[in-house]
Length: 135
Image 1 (cartoon, rainbow, N blue to C red):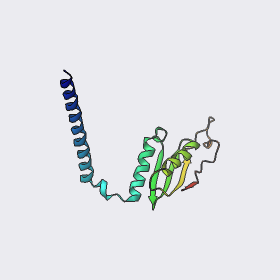
Image 2 (image 1 turned 120 degrees about the vertical axis):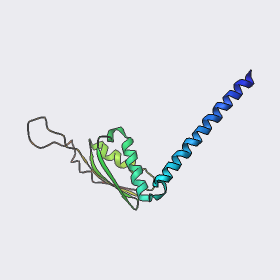
Image 3 (image 1 turned 30 degrees about the vertical axis):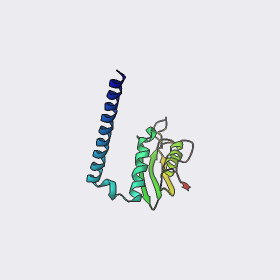
Image 4 (image 1 turned 90 degrees about the vertical axis):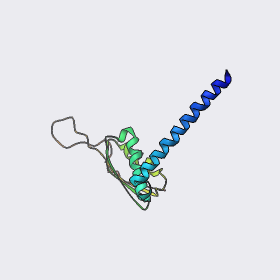
């Protein structure tokens, strides 16, 4: 009776392994056909990785962040909701492989004042985002 259980378990493991290999092969083939896997240069890969990393972070989903990369120097442009997000975005991108420097030009989105009319108020800091992280 144990032999039947072991054989069933082995078959299930084998089948799931084969399915996993087929799925990975299909994804690789799709990437190769679309040309994205081998045509991206180092800076394009860094920028894409930074965009994906920032998009995964829930706090950045509603923000407008643009990523540029040249020779491993990444520039972040756009707006974030709060001052801590300026620092977090730069720290996250600086940790990526191949990133030599981050020029953080993100700004804090202005918040509307509670009163009628007038200019938008910024949180406690200027929100210029001119921080420079160098590895």
